[in-house]
Length: 447
Ligand SMILES: Cc1cc2nc3c(=O)[nH]c(=O)nc-3n(C[C@H](O)[C@H](O)[C@H](O)COP(=O)(O)OP(=O)(O)OC[C@H]3O[C@@H](n4cnc5c(N)ncnc54)[C@H](O)[C@@H]3O)c2cc1C
Image (tube, rainbow, N blue to C red; front, side, top):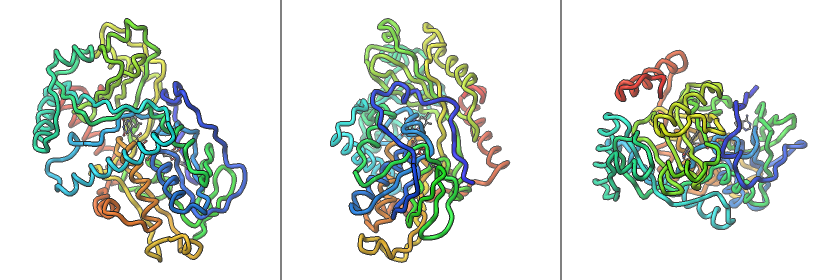
């Protein structure tokens, strides 16, 4: 029996979203050539691309939850397409270039849909601050600056006083501002992407896959009904091990976020003059924050291994984090508090599984005779809006035999390393959190 995730609280972004797609659950049995499981960015991209490549086929897309209640609808909405802060200077240049190409492909793909369908999701190319809160972070920021100079990427340096002037907080020791970053209301984006799916995609929500059996066609038990499908594309991210894949290639962390109630003009002014800004941390486990539309403030912080924390504990941690950043405000301003699961791989590479196909390509004419298989992408590594959109699209193209340089590089570089099972896994996660905490001179439970 495949178990599916239920979050403790709804997504704050979804609660305040201004658009809502009409959705339905699966109401009977189905027989399709393609079944995509998971309606996050990866599954939405895979279903859309399959629909374009096979205009005469019906593509079924099913999800265990409701639209935008997944990680895709509960993230912080940062789309950073020049990931120099994350790129390891020691990695091979072609691997660094692949990461950039992958993110750019994801951005082009999403932007085309958002523009073509006029999806109102606050999509703004606005840049972002990358900030340090500790001496350890300041040293790391210097390393990022060196990489940026090496690649001739322009950035602006900010002292602690300049950060305070722009963002209203004295908490940061130093920051840089980079042009690369588009901010989005993630739940509105997900609703818009579902709404904009091509007519030959049938999307069903609240329909968890409970079992997959048989072989080509597979027999999938979902929401009490049977789906027969020749090709299954699993886009279930942190839930992939439940489906028997990537068990030793990825682990699940939860991270948490809070969004304030609507701010009064005086409260909003505390967060600086700009209506919107986004800040990501240079220290790996520090917090992400945003001022949203001049009306709200969002903070994403904290991690837990494998299990979601109760919302009271999360509220307390987030209130403390708000207080250290903005001591002049009451800590209890968060109207919405939620957690979300991400899948991490050992070396940060996404996971790609292609079933061996007898034909090199599943062209339309070959489809009925094709052998079929189970294909999968996961391993978002906590930054998947662009990456998993690109991975979902590439997965569909690999199934259809549409080759490209990017697909070839993705096959070559998507090779997450081995992660041992618990208890070693749990020990390794805690050791690595403790190591970062020590470097930041902070207690591990404060991260
Ligand atoms: C708090 C938070 C902040 C984040 N901030 C950012 C950010 O600023 N920028 C960024 O790029 N990324 C961010 N991320 C990461 C980002 O949200 C993910 O990388 C991304 O959403 C992954 O998309 P996905 O489609 O792979 O997976 P998901 O969105 O997790 O979708 C997987 C889907 O599979 C479905 N599923 C699972 N099991 C079953 C089943 N048995 N049957 C049917 N369906 C099933 C789930 O219901 C889910 O809808 C953040 C994540 C969190 C939690």
